[in-house]
Length: 309
Image 1 (cartoon, rainbow, N blue to C red):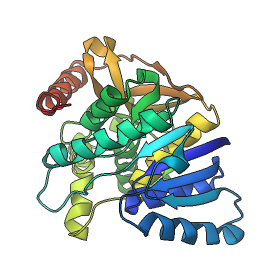
Image 2 (cartoon, rainbow, N blue to C red):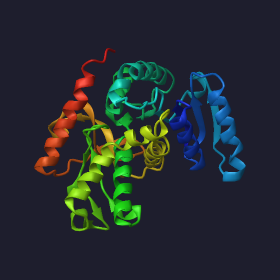
Image 3 (cartoon, rainbow, N blue to C red):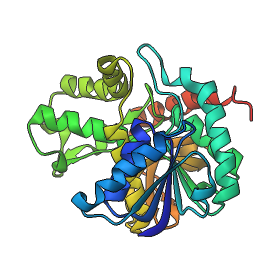
């Protein structure tokens, strides 16, 4: 347990993230920040009133300012507008860049030693904004995308094979969007290569469904976007850091030559521990996977080039 964890944004993703953090007792205090007056306060109070039932002592606080967040050990940024039907993640670029820039300025001023986990979309570019504005080292600015993309991929495989999700080992790298790179060569079911249990055509369809996972949910909801799985992914990262688990998770990390790429955030295998990003693992990729990762990197660079900080 750490002393204080802040969640910026009290919408569906942020509020669910705060609740999961409290229920897992990952921090003594969880602070939820949002610009809408009354919303973080009301949701935080509601969550705190569930503590006697759920059996946690983590104090949940809601606020519209950053004074209560001062000295946070971890800050999860979920703030930003949600995707609407027909809207790509890149459509969110300019609006959410302004929001994340403002949030990052506040974090730098009030919690200069925090580890920052970015969830806001378009994810890879928002990580870049947060890192540039805070000036934090790459170990302390990480993006939650690959955990979510991998969870979707694993859940679809488990459904198709009628097996437990716990037995699906997989990893999705690359940018959080249409160019994400599910690693078929590393996908196994209790160690059995997935290609031995499923025809390639079916697997390709699952890969495409994973890429469209967020859009599929937006299409159903019509006025909102996913939040149960994204919040679960963010909290898995928080938990790995708080408990110094040394988990190997696919996260958006700032690359400095790994995989032959530099100067951008991209989903890669990361070791997460108490210091945040402790190591980027460079694994062997097939020629197709490496080419796909390079295409994904190019897709991330394009919106980065139009960001004005």
